[in-house]
Image (cartoon, rainbow, N blue to C red; front, side, top):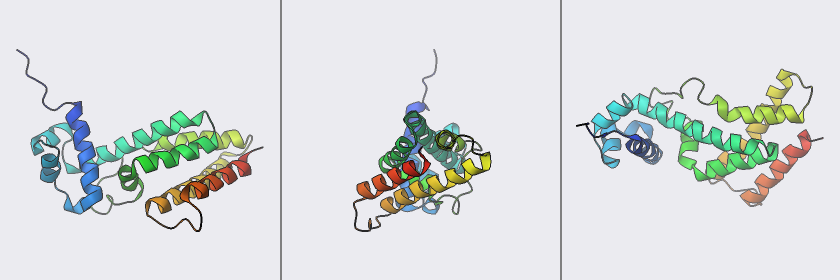
Length: 189
């Protein structure tokens, strides 16, 4: 008789979500594996079995966030640069905890973990493609520089919105739409 699978994908997903939530709520340094496991309704044995330890669990949280973010960017890529910008904001607003962990640096200073090498690159690849399409014949260095400008603009606005900063007399929807249109105009034909 086969043994039942105890540590399945459902438990793995629950542990990832629980870890992200608790870290966002309490801080990376304050959250123990025991707390994550108990909150997820399992034991630390499950965490060790599925991930290996705390650093590996937190790396998996980051990798999972980047995979989800990359999928949203890849889904938006065919519609062009403005669509990528709108998808960036939509994903961040839908996943503020993961966004904060991925880009806020709250893990790096507390727990020795980074995303797995190569985990973040697929999330920026659609932007490189859109900028290259908007600047035909541009050198790789020019494309990379413009990607930095566009990403900085989009990321900055989203980060300010998530931080609860005032939108300088606009709504965040209007401010973001204006910025995305301006980016599109500056790179368009």
